[in-house]
Amino acid sequence: MNGCRFYFILVNFTGLNFVNLFMSNNQNVASSKTLFGHPVGLFILFFTEMWERFSYYGMRALLVLYLVEEINSKNPGLGWTSAEAGDLYGWYTMFVYITPVLGGIIADKLLGFRRAITIGAILMSAGHFALAFEPMPAFYLGLGLLIIGNGFFKPNISSIVGQLYPEGSDKKDSGYTIFYQGINVGAFLGSVLCGYLAETMGWHYGFGLAGVFMVIGMIQFQLSQKMFGEIGLAPSKIKKEETAVVTEEKDELEAVSNPEKSKVETHRLIVVGVLAFFSIFFWAAFEQAGSSMNIFASEYTDRSLMGNGAFWFKVISSIISLLPVGILVWLFVGSFKTLGKDYAAAMSFMGLSVVILLGITGYMIYDQFKAENAEVPATWFQSLNALFIFTLAPLFSFVWQRLAKTKLNPNGPQKFAIGLVLLGLGFIPLVYGSAGIVGGTAVEKVSMIFLVLAYLLHTMGELSLSPVGLSYVSKLSPARLVGVMFGIWFFASAMGNKVAGSFSPYMEKIAEESTMSDFFKILVMVPIGAGIVLFLLSFPLKKLMHGIK
Image 1: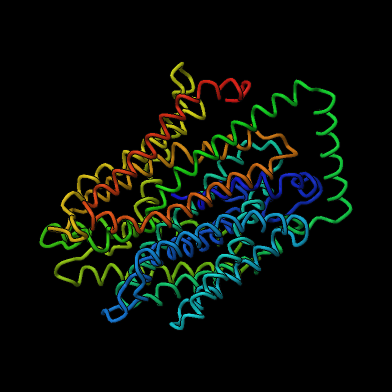
Image 2 (image 1 turned 30 degrees about the vertical axis):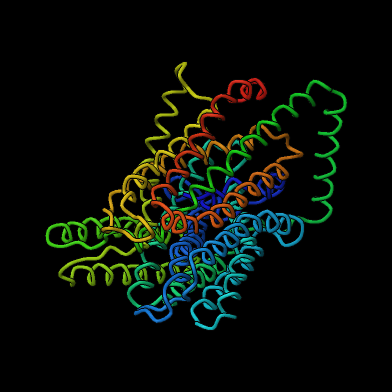
């Protein structure tokens, strides 16, 4: 899934210098009480972040489809052309990646993480409620509030997670893994439930649902603030300046007094720059998921099911929808047992969110089984990326660990190249499936299996590239430049998203002149070509990393 889901790495960018300041002298309920072996505050942040991801991926699933839907249709949209919709989608996702860099700096210097999270949640809630109304000024206002709110929210909640653990804790990595699963749960449920309401009741209901959960998550976080003690508060100006000066002077002195170290740092920064550059190719193709692939699912894919096919889809869809909800119920019960007496109000709002979620999910399942046949919502395909991450992430972790013990273990740039190649291979099913779409008109709509295979391979590519890229930015960057290099990394991601939006309208333009498969052939060749080039470069890049693995 898109890089939005791995912003937790920005802990290295926005808050790492201050972890020791807070953790050494501060005992707090969020860290001192545990649940399932981890600080209980992790699960408060899990729920808060989950609703933000519910918001983003629910919005991502709807935006382009809402823009291109005809004004006079049964579920009226804005009637934009695919070119206009793709362009707006590109600008929106680009700014979503840029603003967290600025939001992290503002929180670090002025607001503190907790205040920034609250401001971000308020702005994002207001943005979703603005989108729930039809006038165009409300639409643009809503997008703007979502972009700005995301900038304040995303990097700073991730930074608090890191501060729950003492420095050097061997549980911190697994804590981030749990937090990352919260991101995926939100992404999955946002795509499914916002998409369901949008396509069955109206687009604005889908936009508004995310706002409801953002408000509940914000209130829950506010009522839990006391448990975090001093974690996430704005550092005192004096301590902050002293820490920054000491760190900067120490790094600069070492660089000047040791020219060899300076050379090594330069070489490693070149590697980061190369990886950031190639990430543009990845996200430009990967983010077709929210634009051209979304339109392909809506307009050119046969989503109708009858008989046994409809029945088994309903069963499987129900199971995979209820599974993450069941996990949330389990986490809520555990959190309530640990915090219910002292934080009853916060737990009440957490429970309210779970009850509402159960109600909507249950009604969706009932509504699906009530219908004799079934039509798979176009937005449902957006949930496949998160679903495949649930199932494949442990497998990839196991494979990398086993390969690390052998001579066959690929280095970072090679894993990156593998990710690009897998992404390109993922478009091959769409090349084959769209071959009959000539002149912009399908001879007959294509099977859903082509999109499912595409999302499967794209997720495998993401798991090969995304965590690796972020990890290597952190490993290869000197302490004084970590923030700058993460800024460059996410700027590259933003550019990839913008290119994705600008390129997506060519799907129908190329189809009018030849066949739609020619569009997807480009998306096969570019990532695979970039992956081959990067694989060849990986050998000199390995030398430039100077032992970093």
